[in-house]
Length: 201
Image 1 (cartoon, one colour):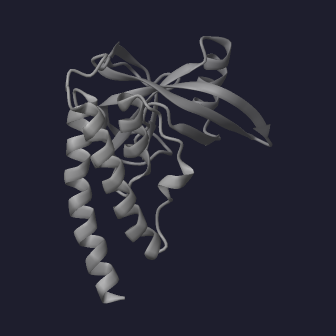
Image 2: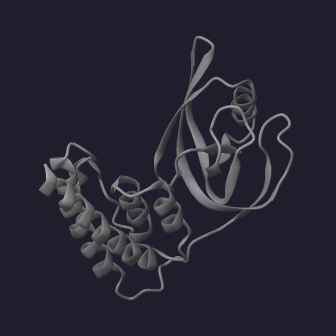
Image 3: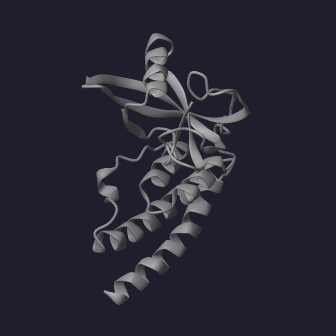
């Protein structure tokens, strides 16, 4: 397991600079094994040094590339399936846990899912345009959204300007339809805050 200060989402790229001995060993073991490790958000504490409190919801990551950079490893991974930690084990030699997969319903049971996706894409564009005026965030034009609403719901969650806790909440929702509706609610709040900042500027 790799606890991080950010929420990894399915289909999102995860670049890492690994230098702690415990995580260097984790990467070596993963490369020799199936190339996968679990990622969870840190609830309290820091990425370096250990002793952090962790959330029990996360995402598997699959290693795409590993490069040696001096005493560090540059690792590029991509988010995969959602997971739930059922039991944390000891951290020797690195954080370990008993996991269960947490699949999303396929296809999404919401009959209005395509309309939900279109509404959320439009809302995301509006909020990202406001964030761009403040020099923050990235344009949705740089993201090639999948046609599959499940994948697209995670892609949107990854790029909109919400907190890591919000991203974790969105990751944990039971379906893409529920996720898209909740994302629009969060974006309404973000728009108000960005509008206030623009008004002060």
